[in-house]
Length: 98
Image 1 (spheres, rainbow, N blue to C red):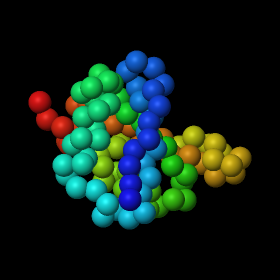
Image 2 (cartoon, helix red, strand yellow; image 1 turned 135 degrees about the vertical axis):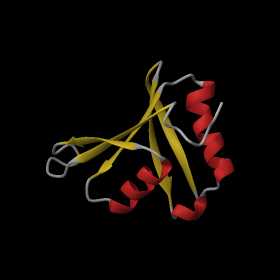
Image 3 (cartoon, rainbow, N blue to C red; image 1 turned 180 degrees about the horizontal axis):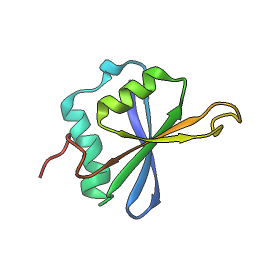
Image 4 (tube, rainbow, N blue to C red; image 1 turned 90 degrees about the horizontal axis):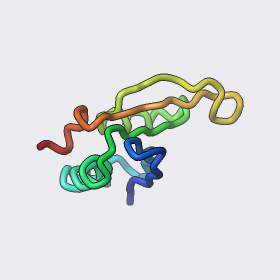
């Protein structure tokens, strides 16, 4: 089971939360559909996501999907642990092609 949950920060940027019980939940077809929604249907130029620094599985999945690390947000998870901010632009998204 898995999916993306998003909320629009502004007309061109969408923040998504990636949730899954295993990295094997998704196919190329599903990824194309998931990324087509923010980039093609909503017209977003950037999609962002964030995860806590110590969540290596989530960070590996995020990078595997094509997100690029922007950097840490110090102590933003629980007042102690950093959050890692990732972003992907429409041009960087290899799941959808014109």
